[in-house]
Image (tube, rainbow, N blue to C red; front, side, top):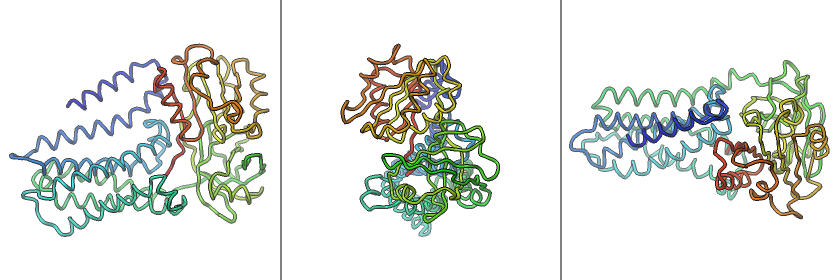
Length: 441
């Protein structure tokens, strides 16, 4: 009950904030996950047998583990109707990872608390499925850690193939609980609730692995132009073969290019949307696949596009804004500047952080837009000569109070996390800090 009260208080505070309704909406998904979890605990506590001891709480933890793991499967579906309620697909994937890790962590005390469960029926099949789920999920969590994946040199495509087995281990956990949990056998309401939860999760997994792949209709595009820029960056222009996909500036796409490394699907931010529906991508050669693209991609190559996704949109912010781009993170800001109609009436300080002057791609274009837009001020930060950009520097440079400003961040994860912490420290509210999260592992 205290957890539910705290969640409701937080929800009321969010709803009372004077912010864009779209920002309020993105809190709904996380709130719903936590609120339903609290309700589930309440349902199980009402059915608590007397006397109850550690094994009862072990069963409760097991049910919660299955519950959040099923959410992890739902969030992996990339169903666009869920995006507004979590703040975009990138944040859906953050919640996907969080629920998967929390589910696994809940299984650990569950195992120790129920191993001597009094009155629990012995089911060799059920126990075997429980062991399979525990060790399978443990392995998936471990290989999903970025340091482990780097250590064993696990490329994205093999990792994705391994990751797709998650639903099989969650299915094993669901069946394990149904076979061995004495509380479920003793209470029809709990049994029905548990089966609904497990059924939703497994239906989501089947949809993602079978149905979505059958009904998917990726957009057909062809590469019109490829420019190789400094810093191993590709500027790619794509033309639609059939009807173009409706893309808003700031969104991202999953793109598969044909050719030698055909049809590997990777996310890329849109760097520009033309009136004729053609798209521009700015691709930095950071991994094996993007390095291969930089070396081999040519005009005329076919491309398949899924999406668009994401809610990285400066119109969510108010009249005072700060934009911070680092490296290839400049792409979504370019898409905004290439459709500058919404900039009128806004005061924007745009910080473009690069390692060297030669890395400041598109700077002339950005400064040309600033020359036409009196509210846009561009600050080039060359870190090798000026040092890293800091929150204190932004406070000194920008007009008005930073706590009244919406800040948009795109760049390496370490950079966005550092600025998020620093902005919080000086009083910028969480709902005024916007960033893209491109960590899809």
